[in-house]
Length: 503
Image (cartoon, rainbow, N blue to C red; front, side, top):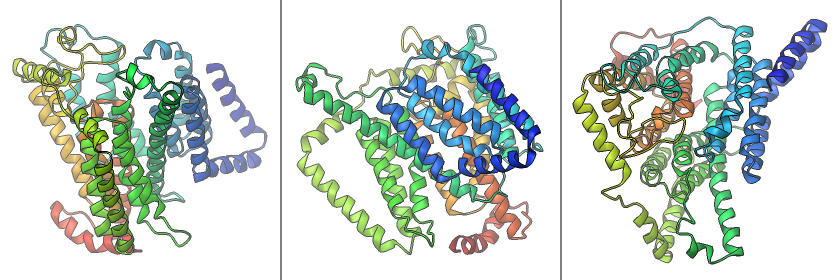
């Protein structure tokens, strides 16, 4: 793989020297196709085939090769977003596969080389956005976590270094790169493009859920006793990860459904959002079912109030869903009872023990916490798989236990910066990203979520960078200079932004 990447780089240089005019025309064609819906749907189809034929390891190599080609030929880094997200999604099925993928380290080296070459060839002026100081504060807290704790920095390993860097100054570096290389002055709307990418990612998550149950159904048909013989017949190990993806992506098809065009109706996208919620219910993640229902209700109520042109259509759709839900609850009461039983929480469950450990760790180390590399509760409470760290399965308790009061202050400031960016301009896209952030935040109350640098924190960072770019665009077009008083900006901007949205 590394040799192939080197050959590709040399070929690009040679082609560029031989015939610059034809080379530039070819590059322009590749870039136009790479950002088009046709290419994205092609990537979606490839990912579906990978999952269907259980080719996840080889499929990751295929998508790394695709991303390498895109990085070499395309200046726009958004073209690599969908292949990256699809890869992360189907790799969710590869639980405890560190030993499998560590053997592919030469491919990772090749990808890193391509990334470095990309940012050298297409270097941009460094931009520090509004979120810089908030992420910097969180990076400092992450790095200082466990400063005076025995066993945190002493027992540090490769996994610990990855998460400390990835959640700290690594994500700060990525933020600066994204801020510098994502531009609002493109021949497409970056908000609409990223929304379409997120919608296709959610559709792929839905496909993964449906394909899983189709596989189970085929097993049941061949051996009906398998349902009785295997008490974990319906168990899905990757349910929480795919639920997190679904909650991140769910608001975007609703946003695209009321973004009307003169060419065709967009109402079918509304049902894509509904399908994502159905998949959340099917996958049996308790956090996904509970918090996904909250997020779904907010999305439905919001679209009824915002999308005035299709309000009657949306109300009819909502009535149809409620009617179907009532019929299903009555007709399949036994199945519903089983699902409700799955929602119950055992008092001796691992999560509860992790929560208690987190509070005890905070009480003993209140200033800097015990750090991300703390492993004092592994033997008694939970033993993470190779390559993982001691997650407390709750973002708030993770901050308290790992980073202490310093972490609370720093992460609180980062949260303030994020909300400030999201509310700087009251647009439908900003509200959509806020709902996506809300979904990720709720799932992070029962899962690592925001403390997974790849992919969840990366996704949130990219979405917020695009929000920053769209805010700048609106503020520039309105010829307003932002005053010190933030609320006054919102009042002055509201009429202008609403007028632009209606267009």
